[in-house]
Length: 121
Image 1: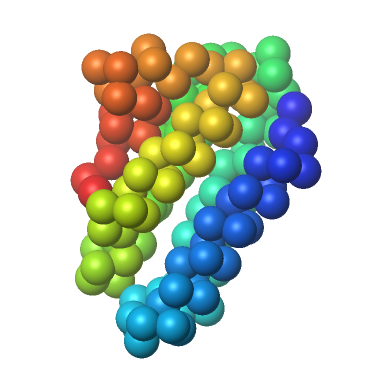
Image 2: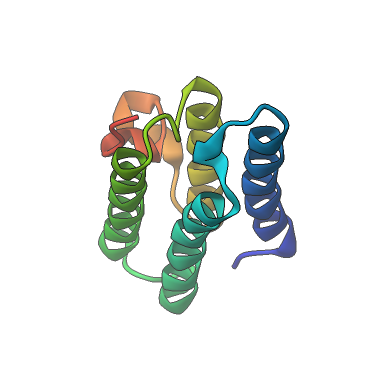
């Protein structure tokens, strides 16, 4: 269900955050913090892989809810971790993962995407 491209895009997103953080001395984008964000996505991917493309939609949606809430919690722990640019990147990644899982992200968050159902950032 998930291809190397989406895994690479997730990795590159958090690597970019880390490298930009280093360049501009933004401590919230430490290697550890960026790895924590990436792990949240990898946990979502692992859960969805186990469910498979034909898995129950309600359970897939619950997996997204759990993931977005974990990202909310990470953002609470690390002030300034998810700002405007990061929010856009995360929403894009969540929508891309939703498509690969067989969900239409435009059906969530009043058309704003699946993360918009639960995100606090």
